[in-house]
Image (cartoon, rainbow, N blue to C red; front, side, top):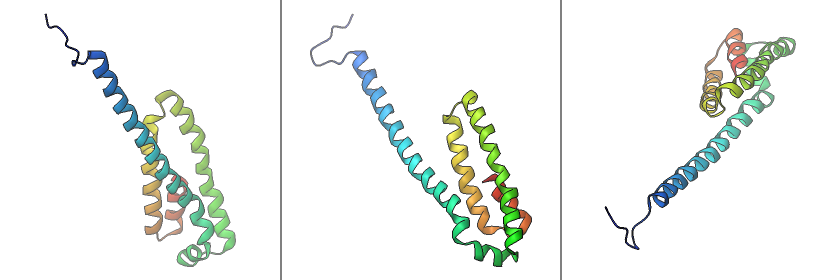
Length: 126
């Protein structure tokens, strides 16, 4: 049987320091994630109000069609209710990363779209 000296750490102290390191690492991850999430959310929500005329000229559409397109694409906001409902059952941590990458991919695809229907489709999933 091993005897402990004064300089030896007890197993509980060793595990508590490992737990604290993991906790600090997770807090740093959450803070960085929230900063990037806020950046993407601000970009995706203010993008359309700033460059409406450029989008309309690229897609060759007028104001009534633009607002019709916004109303159709805004129906995608109802998916937020479903996703939040599912997040209560599945867990919020497993929903954070797909939501983050979903916004990023949708923002990137928005720049590549050259058609009216493609724009509505990508905007619906944003």
